[in-house]
Length: 414
Image (cartoon, rainbow, N blue to C red; front, top):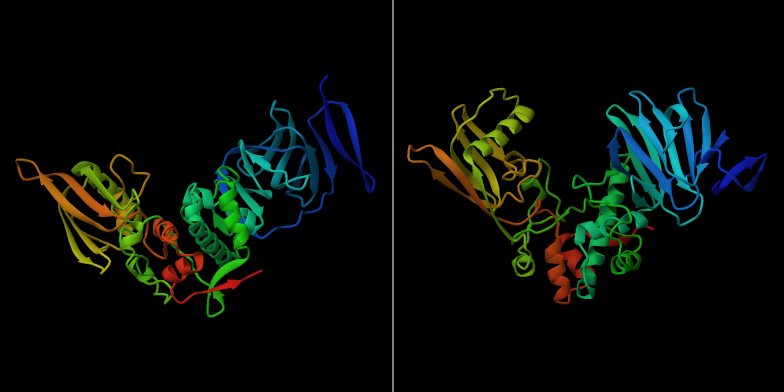
């Protein structure tokens, strides 16, 4: 029979024992909670998950009756949502425990990774029951968190863009730092997608990005002694935007609209064009109006689209859509969420900076709508492709940051 290492708690000490496998895991009663690093990132909601580790890993399981149990394992385990609590089982289906409300997962060896559904993560995992199923929170040091943010946010860059990676490190660290206090009442500080920052664990890590993180360790952007809201986006398309022109919030003096034309025009997202069938776009708008404004009619026919007002940057401030059910106005960034992309309703429009062209059938009815636009993202704060362009032309990360976050200071948080 295959031999594996099982770790057992005996009185105050640990005994390492090599023995024939009766079960993949060994239970430990009365386990204490592990300590929490700096940042808590929600990475998954699901009905079931598979957890594993590099070598031995530990599970601290908390029950509805306030008792706790501990397990060590060297092989994959499965957690399944039963509708109100969690069931822990081996990969072969053998049930180890039921009635779990939350589970903490950590590696026994320093530097080893936790593996969730085949993906490696630094730090530890908190697994909670939620209304919609299992909620997984990755808890880790902010500096380690950034190693999973820079690759998906900036891509794999070469040495000539190193200063842009450093600028991104400071901006992403600042954003994460500011969310800790903002979300103090939740069980997480951030989510792992575009609603906050894209985070993918260890996948895609590379040395140059990690070096940029290390060389700016602890640095954040501040204004009047407080961490700023360090928004950033892929491509501004020529001009960045003031925050108040995107969302319903006041302007921050450090987030100004600037001319970035000479630096981001190389981006493949600088210019774009999309064409909708009129019925397709009408269905997207109908769905948006139903969800946001209570529009309940099953059909909607677009008869005309007019740009009512633009901001100085070129982005649309007010868009009017005329239909067989009257006029509907869409403002600022909500335009991107209402229109969606042709044949990809799961994706929002690249930007709100575009021109509209309408095409009609022989009977005068609207047949197609074409949007010719610039930029990718909301346009507020640092333009990532602009930062890369500036780095390639010799600007250092401090110059880059002071350009996009005008009145902000670069401070040492730790």
